[in-house]
Length: 148
Image 1 (tube, one colour):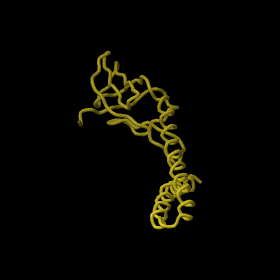
Image 2: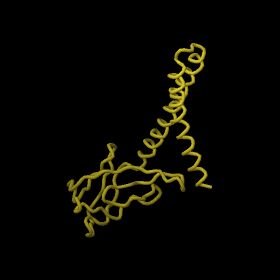
Image 3: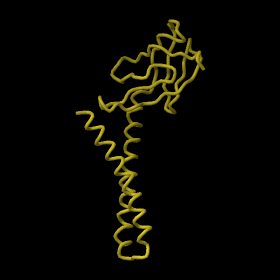
């Protein structure tokens, strides 16, 4: 059933992007006919507004969801070694700070990604795990910064 949802999402996005392009082509090709332009231009403007609202609403929901992930997490392993006093602080600018003994020792990027099958967001950490969901405890298994 989730594959059908993904397919419908792809078709919807293609239509939302394709409709303004087709209408723009029709407006250009019939620019000498006032009656056709009166019909096509409002459709073009309307389709652009609908497409903008649709794509912008996805960004808003991701932004709202990301606020749940902000804050401190216990970090178990740093560069392959156990770390007792390590924390990770996820910041609003989609960066994280690695804090060891109350000192910032590193920095990285984080983001949320949407999983179409489980219909939810999960946390993706640069140089760390890529599949953390919010329901898990505020603990991160590892970060490897030596690869940089």
